[in-house]
Amino acid sequence: MNHKNVLKISDLKSNTDLVDPLSGYDLIFLNDFMIDANIGVYKHEKLKRQPLRINVIAKVKNPKTINDSRLQSVVCYNQISKKIKKIIGAGHTVLLEKLAEKIFKECFKNKRIETMKIRLEKLDAIKEAASAGIEIERSRA
Image 1 (cartoon, rainbow, N blue to C red):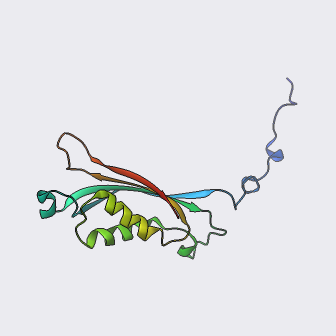
Image 2: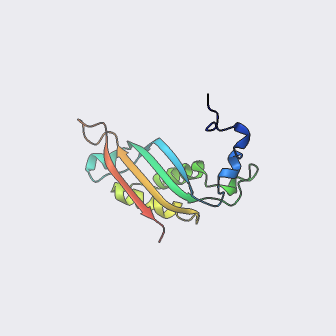
Image 3: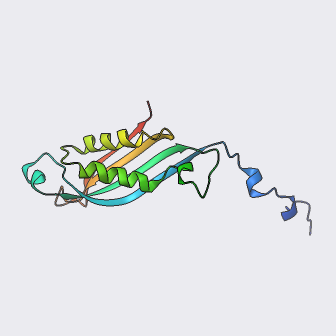
């Protein structure tokens, strides 16, 4: 049996030697965030809150260093969820597109976020559909 083509474990570099720490991006996500919101054009939508499902993906430039004891060293998905709650809690929004715009505006205050994709789904908008909504992607100006 010929062993010339067998790779030895001792010949491998460590995993950290194989990664350029300054390359690439982190993707921060919030999946299936469920919240009731005052949103919509129609009279019945203005009278009561309705369930929304929100999905967010934020493309973030890799931090130079990540510090376990300093949350500010990363973009935090919990902070994104708090921003969304605050925006929705501020009152009625007519269009999903406007709600997305408000979320983009608030989240892009964090200069590390370069691109975001937001999917907003009304769960009760169309009786025969599981959901209806929009998906929008924007990049920092």
